[in-house]
Amino acid sequence: MNKANSYLFKHFSGLFSSLFFILFFITSVVFFIKITALTAVIKMNFLELGTLYIYLLPRTLVYTLPVTFFIALCITLFNLSKENETIVLFTLGYNPKKIAQFFMGIASFLSLILLLDVFILIPISKQLNANFIEYKKAEAKFNIKASEFGQKFSDWFVYIDTIDNQNAYHGIALYQLPKKNETEKLILSHSSVIDNRDGILRLRLDEGKIFDFSTSSIGQIDFERMHINVQPKTAIGHIQSVAQYWGGVWDQPRRAYDLSFFILICLFPLASTLFALSLGIVTYRYNREGIYLSMFGVIASYFALTTLLSSWHPYSAPFVVFGVTFAGAYALYIKRIKRVF
Image 1 (cartoon, rainbow, N blue to C red):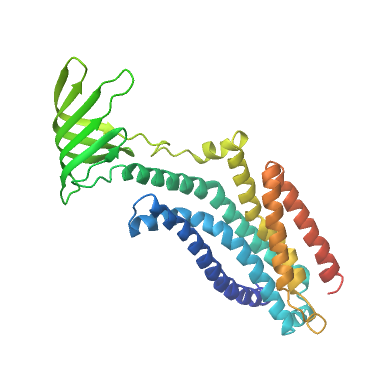
Image 2 (image 1 turned 180 degrees about the vertical axis):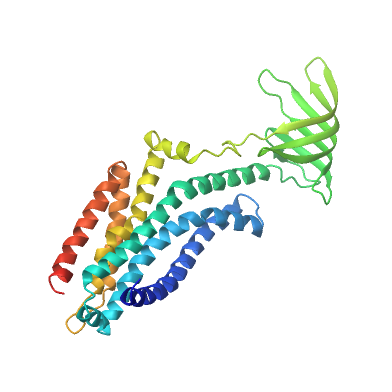
């Protein structure tokens, strides 16, 4: 890296770091609010909230890094133009083409990292997040309080005498109303605990009796141990491979949209680098107006196109949106930079 590149990178990296932490903090707060909303449905401690937050980190990076790169590059070049430092670089032979090549290299590296994040980390973290929430919902079905009537577990009405410090239930009674072609049942157990085996939660009952009430008789079965399972809506603990996960884009519209949307967000640094040069490199004496409106206009337009085309036709959207954006950025670069400087 020559001195000019080092000089540009120093200014860019400092602003990039500051903006990244600001945007990362804002995005994290939004995601954390969504996480805490789950506490209205399921009970979680601070450590479990932190676990869910970690699962959302790959998506947080995808949203923050591309936008941070574009904004930091625009403002860096504009500040250098404001101080006439870009003119000095051009006078010394460091032309806009070299600046474009340098930052296109950084944008390519960033886009590659983000694509790896999308194709590898996001599928795994998304499934872990869904499984964890499903597990907590299943576990919430076991939140039975002592000495209270009217509580239900699945199809059973539950009453327990006490709960000890190890979260074991003592003196438990379960009653099931009669169903079609079934009799009413009563289960009495000395003690019970929650088992978690391969991600499946179940209530383990120890030393008890099962009473079966029919119109003509009462049946009794003594048991030493019995399990009542809670079957989750999804297969907790089953994690698809990356190939299996993204293979679903051909028959699952939502997954096809996600892939198209995330790919385009990852390619935003590459697609917008020439836009950043066109907006940031100016002759400040004649271009004193700020670049912020144009900068956010580029971001809003790209994200709008990404969302709309990914919804309409996700299979062609990455090619169309990236191609149109890059072509527009190159045309503006030719008009405002290459012909002027």
